[in-house]
Structure formats: structure tokens, C-alpha cells
Image 1 (cartoon, rainbow, N blue to C red):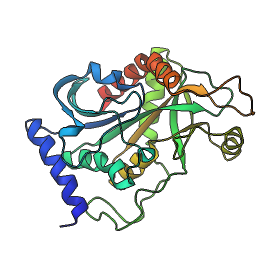
Image 2 (cartoon, rainbow, N blue to C red):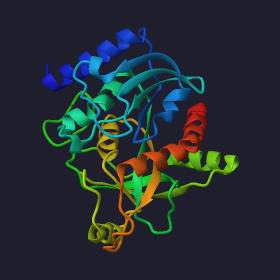
Image 3 (cartoon, one colour):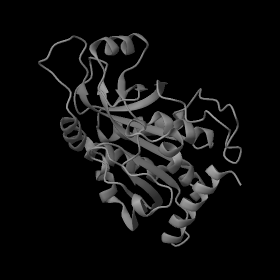
Image 4 (cartoon, rainbow, N blue to C red):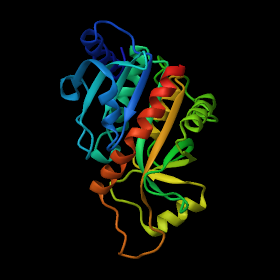
Length: 275
């Protein structure tokens, strides 16, 4: 057996045993400061990453590092309370291992969230942005020998973010009177924040928000044939000029994400109700 697949199956088997053999319908990845959604899950199991075979350790600010299983909106869900990042020094195989583990557990839909810098200068801190597409400036996690057990060598990415799920959330947001933006997320390596010159470049190629995660997870989920919905919380507005009056700060990012978490929780919960 492929050693990579063996690691995935070992992790999935451990989790399956700890959740009583039940099957989650929805997988959720919670980013910086957005672990609050985990608090509304009727948890049946909370498993620290450190206990799961072959899982990495989450070291980023605002990432608690727990795998949570339980019910949300009447559906069984599994949620990552914190993710792994390429900038933490993990290879892409390790960064995306939990997505393949959730696929092995049986999820049918993946919801991803992140804290992101607003490139689009019309955005404001605290805005929620539905991700309609992305630009990848990270190493592609599908490079290397294909995981034939999970998907084809060349997965199509025309609608990486499921159009039907986007429409559902737009409708939910309208009924709930929760303002939402929609835009393109650019994923880069980090951990340094982008320079003003980079901000101007990213804007010129069509990006609306920038962050250091999410895209690898989406690529792997789509490779597995799993529909994806993604949302960013805009936690700061990126600088377009070299002025030292408005600097980026990791703690500020977490605080801004936490302030927007209630609205995102409501949208995710209502979306899961429709699945």
C-alpha cells in the first residue's frame, strides 16, 4: 500500500473509533479566530490533534488544534478547530492530510473559512466575503504521484467553489439581513504579510482578498470530488502605499475575526440545515 494512503487510513480509523463508527456528512475547517463555530456544535467527541496518528501540530495564533465531531443543524459534522499551514514548515502532504482523512470518513461537503486581508479597497474590516474563485501562489498539493484512490490526475477547477452552495448562502444572507461580499481569494505562502507592491500586483490580477491558507485544502477536496463552500472574514485592509501608519498585526487579525464570527456561524449553520 502507498505509505501516504496508509497514513490517511490510520488517522481515519483512529477518529472513526473515537466517534463510535458514525459518518459525518459535512467537514468544516475553521481559520484564525473563527473557532467559535465549534462552540455551537453538539460535540460528541473532541480529539486533540496531538492524539491523532499522523496529524501535525497547529502552531498559528487562534488555532486551538482540535478535531471535533458532533451535530450541527441536525447533521453530523466534523470540524477542524484550527488548520495546518505551509508556513509552519509542513509539506503540502501534511497540510492537506486532514482533508483526505475527512473524505475517508465520508463527508459529502466541505466548508472552509479563513481570516484574510482585504485587497479590494472598498472592503471594510469585519466584512464577510464569499469566495467565488481563487488564485494559487502556494505549491500545488497535487504535485507528485497521484492519489488514484481519491481522484483523477488532472481535476477540473472551473467551479472550485460550488455555485449552488454560493447561491444558497447568498439567499440565506439576504433573508437574515447579513451583508456579504463576494470575491477572489489569493493564497500565498506567508508568514510575512504582503508588501504594498505585492498588494498592487494582486489587485491588478483580479484578487479581492489575500491569505496564507485554504487553497491547498480546496484543491485536495475538489480532487476528491467533494463540493466546497468558502468564506473569508476581512480582518484588515492591505496597504497599497509604503506608509508606516497602518501596519499589519496578527493579534489584530484574530480580534477582528472573532468579532465577525457570530455572523459567519449563523450563515454556516443555516447552510448546513439545507444540505
